Image 1 (cartoon, rainbow, N blue to C red):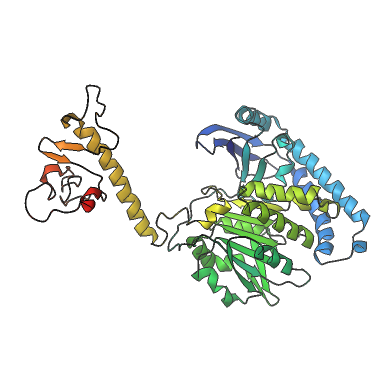
Image 2 (tube, rainbow, N blue to C red):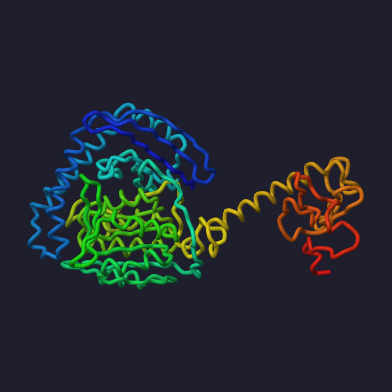
Length: 480
């Protein structure tokens, strides 16, 4: 079972004139680029018209379900109409994607894919209308049971990390339970509290100034349940944090940037119409966000959260955890019968510069920080010193090998046992042991240091000279 990443980068265009695209297929294990092919999606105004017809029908239906209406208020006629619209949408999407240029691109991809591969398929575009489409309905991928689709914007980079604290082996979650008028967010609380090995702080219908923990502390996951919305024309996501305060996500830009800097890896918005929330957070380079594309019925929101977190906390991959949760909603709980299309509402918004972590990765220190208790600048220094040490040792072995005496045979192989750390620097200075620190430049304290001209100190070092206080340069020195 391999791991593959397909990025469909869709450029600037429109449904009325078409979109240029580039497909890139990479092996996630070797990081090799396997295929890159370009083409153009044809004009297809009927696709977006088909989507908006389903969207209108679904929103009328889901609004009743989200507000806890009785089954009698949701008529069979409304359900049938919604079901027919989604079938038409599926047909139109596949008619569009059967274009010859798309098929030619796929012919280049398929030889590199196996049915058992774990495939992340990311639609990378800055057109929010393309974010709205249910790409998983693309029929050619039905034979790949472990594929899951995600969304990304075109500009991606690793978020800067600073002052990332050690998390003590627990997954830290900040859960905001916002305005709950007409919905049951207590079920969300219960699901979160059932998770193992977590540290959760709940903010219940907070006022704006009570969101300071998001700025001041380090969190792995930000969770929101309540009412939210998207203004797709302005590409703006909105959160109703309490019955009296509504906040545009852009107004929390600095707070969220600070949270990401402090180690935030994943945001989950278990709330209605959150696509613009993911669109906005992508600009902040948040690694992963899970949102609901449209208004979501209570039961769908709660069951998805339960199934997703159960699977993810069992160390399933983020993508497969989302895929399995959606499949359970559709096939085992028959929630599609009440709101056709509800099972594909959850979607991942992915920063392509970051690999999605496992649950066990979250409990560890931030992957961006080698030394999580120190600042980013200190970590960069540490990386630099480590790199210099590796390069220096390599230079040392390569350049001094001709001068080594008595320790190598005619083939250049060492005569000593693996436990013998003897290395001869020159004919008069023999060094034994494991260096206790990385080499330093400009100070000839130890033989593996470098002088101001970048030359190995060797016999010129204080360690090699007779008399005076000999510095500790090797681990064996401390044991003697």
